[in-house]
Length: 293
Ligand code: NAP
Image (tube, rainbow, N blue to C red; front, side, top):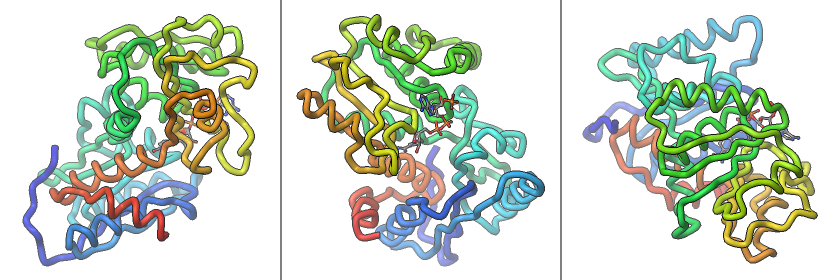
């Protein structure tokens, strides 16, 4: 999907549409990647307040991308699905997930992609070798869709647990109908102690996609303190603020490998950057940007 481009004299104009964006890490990540690649340009935020006027602002920004004024846009909450009617086409990944976080121009047409799914998988590999088997995904919102899709394509049997069972069921139904060639089974379950206790004993992977544990609610965790972790599982928490969430802390102190979601954030950004510019994204420079930002 990467569009090869020579180094060009005009600056790159990249950006992010969403709300709220005041604390977004994306400008730091992408501006570090631009500098490291020796490219001139800027990545900036385009906050679009939801409500009256949001649709036309969205259309206006996308038409600037269509006519070459902008070179690439990321889309975040709450527009990852709202943006779909404004696009000309979607990649199979974005179509299957039903959400877009990256828009690029291809031959004057707007193409929607989802880099959360490959970004998650790429960062999951930093936890080292793991045997495929059963995984549990906690939460069934936008990020869960990308995670469940990615895991399923990678051969995992996935159990989706959500406090609203109908949301988990919807996710499973949507993925089954948009991607009939799903590798293995996915199941919907209600979130709670009972469902967690009755998961397959050989559970290999626990992924949190709920905001539980996110600052300032540092003490919260989607995994009950009184429930032991399956000893052979690894834990991935999409939450990246604080750098060590309660879930990750508890898993590590039980001897499990565990990781928070900053690496996924860097990976999804790197993949978007590579699509827009055709240049490799320097992940190390992006991490350093975060450290010094
Ligand atoms: P979302 O669409 O709002 O989905 C959140 C999910 O968590 C929903 O299923 C929601 O259920 C559930 N949930 C919320 N509060 C809960 C609680 N107290 N108990 C149980 N379930 C709860 O949000 P999202 O876009 O998927 O993002 C979810 C989290 O992932 C956020 O913390 C976000 O920062 C993080 N994230 C990280 C990355 C990364 O690159 N690391 C990427 C994307 C997202 P209801 O619908 O019933 O509220």
